Length: 320
Length: 284
Image (cartoon, rainbow over all chains, first blue to last red; front, side, top):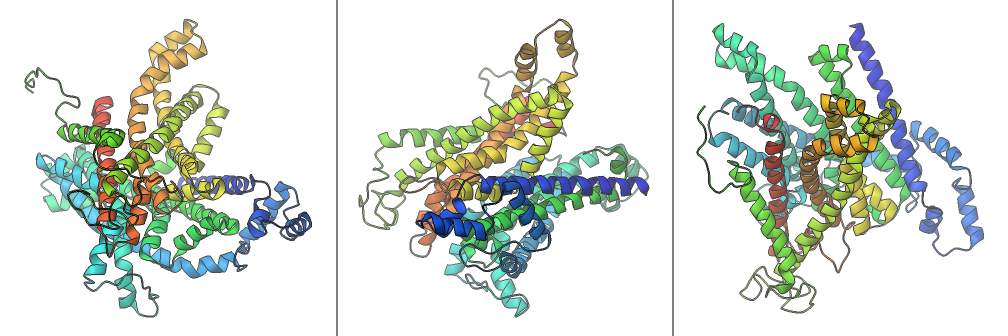
C-alpha cells in the first residue's frame, strides 16, 4: 500500500503547486491593468478619492503583498466583497452553488447512463460495417453541436408544448423535488449532449481495444458466457478511460453551465459569473475562476487516485 | 487480404467517404462566406431591407431579423467571421505551440519542465471559463475572442508536439544528424519539424473546431464579436431573444454552426487516419 500512498502524496503536492500557479496567474492577469479597480468603482473621480479607495482596498501596497493578503483570506474562506453590490462574494457563491452542482451532476449522470451502454454495445458489434459509421456520426454530432444550439431547440420546443417541463422558473430542490426536476432536466440534458458523445466514443474505443487482448480470448476459450466476459473483463478494463473522460468532461461542465444557465435563466454560479464579467466586477471574476480551477484540479487529482485504485501498476510507475 | 481495386481518380481520404463529404461541405461553407457579397441575397447590414422579423419567403429565404436585415446574408457573413477568427487564432497557437513543444522536448530538461507545467496549468482551466477570464481582462470584442482561443488551444498543441518530438528525437536519423554536426536550427527545422507536421496538422484541425465553438460561445454570451459585425454565435444570441415569435432566426445560425463544427471534426478524423493510420483504426 505504501507505493499507492506515496503516489497519492505526490499527486496532492503537485495539485497544490498547480493551484498556487493558477492563483498567481489569475491574480497577475487581473492586476496587470493599472488602476482598473478604481476605474470600475469611480470612473470619473478626482485623484484624492481614487487614492482613498486604493488605500481602503489595499491597492496601494506592493503587488506581492496584495497577493499574499488575498491568498491568505481566500484560504480562510473570505473571497472579498463584490465591487458592485458590496456583498461578500463567498456567500453569494455558496448560495448559488447547489443549483449549478445539481445541473452538472444530472448532466454527468445522463451522459454516463446513455453513453456507456451505447458505447459498449457499439464496440461489441464493431465488426459490422454500419455500426462504426453510425456511432462515429452520432458521437461526432453530439460533440459538434454546441450546447446553446441544443438548448435553443429545447427551449423552443418546450416553451411551445410544455410537456411537463417548466422553463424559466427555478424551484429549489428542498422545496419541491418534482417541481425542481421539471425545471432542471432540460438544461441538464442540453449540457449532457457533449458528455454523451465523449463517453460514447471513449467507451467504444476502450471496448474495442479490450476485446483485442489475449485474456478475452482466454476467457472465451474457457467457455465463459459472453455476458460474463463483458461484465468481468470488458467493463472493468474499459472503466479507466471512461473515468478520465468524465473528469475532463466535468471541467468542461464548469464552463458549459455558464451558457446553459444564461439560456434557461437558471440562478446558478454561471449566471452570477457572467454578470460579474459584464459589469467588470473583478472580485467576482477572480473568485469564480479560482473556485472553478480549484474544483477542476481536485477532480483531476481524484481521477488519478481512482486509476491507482483500479490499476495499482500506475502508482508504481509514477506515470502520467 | 486482397488488393483494393485500382482507382483512376484518387480521392482524398480514400475510402473514408464521411470525411470527404465533410471536406466538401466545409469548402462550400467557406465559399459561401467569401462569395456572399457577390450573391443576390441582399446586404447583411442593410437595415430595413425587408419587413421586420419576416418568416422565410421567396425574397428572404431565411427570413429577416428584427431590423429587417436578410438572415441568409447575415448567416453567410457570420460563418466567415466565425471561421476566420477561429483559424487566425489557431494558426497563432499552432506556430507558437509547435515551436514551444519542439524546444521543450529537445533542449534542457528545466525548460521542458517549465513549459510543461505552464501548459498543464492552462490546460486545467475549463475552456469557456478561460475565455471569460480573458474577456474580463481585455474587455469584450474580437481581440479577446482571438486571445481566448489561442490560450485555450495552445496547451494541447504544446503537449502533442512535445510528445511527437520526444519520440522522433530518439530516432537514428536525428542522432546521426547531430553526430554529423548539423546545427541546432538545422536539426529543429529540417529533421524534427517535418516529422511533426502531420500531428500538428491534425491538432490544428481539431483546434479550429474547438476555436469555432469558443468563439460562438463567447459571442453568444455577448463577450465576443460586437454589433454591427455578426458571427454565428451572436446571431444565435439575437435569435434566442425572438425564439417565441421568430424561431427561424435562431435555427439558421444554429444548424449552420453545428454543420460547420461537425465538418471540421470529421475532416480532422480523416486527416488523422492519413497521418496515423494505426491509431485511428484500431480494428483494421
